[in-house]
Image (cartoon, rainbow, N blue to C red; front, side, top):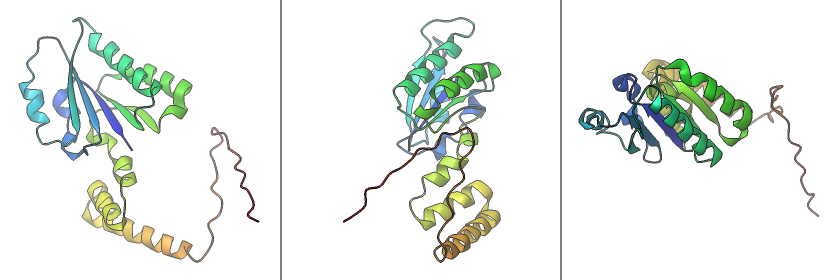
Length: 189
């Protein structure tokens, strides 16, 4: 699972980069900033991150130049299917229409594309999905919900899955919007 964060450097960069230190080495952060601005402050905010951090200077100055560059980059990433999860990190609501258009037309090219105020606000589901064993699942739930609630939730899930080993699971109900795919299996002889 690969996550890409496209960070609007013109819009509360300190808030937007909150959580960058929680990312894994397979994650990518693209930080878009205005031409000629010094990068020292931004680089210091990213110093403890394992993620692949890239700094992208705007091609030209002017109102909304970074916004258009971010949406163009997001469209290319979605088109190339380079990310399971892609997030525009900004408090600027102007991105919403473009992201909605990507979801409507190319919804099968990714797991999630969204507009979020910070990297940290994107991490609940991906952290849980990255869990490879019981301990990492428990750690992810504790990280997301705190020690008390995370452990209670983990123990509850453990009971459910232990009980489900005894009873075959019911078929999942698909949401109405999604198309069902018929799977045919060859019989063994």
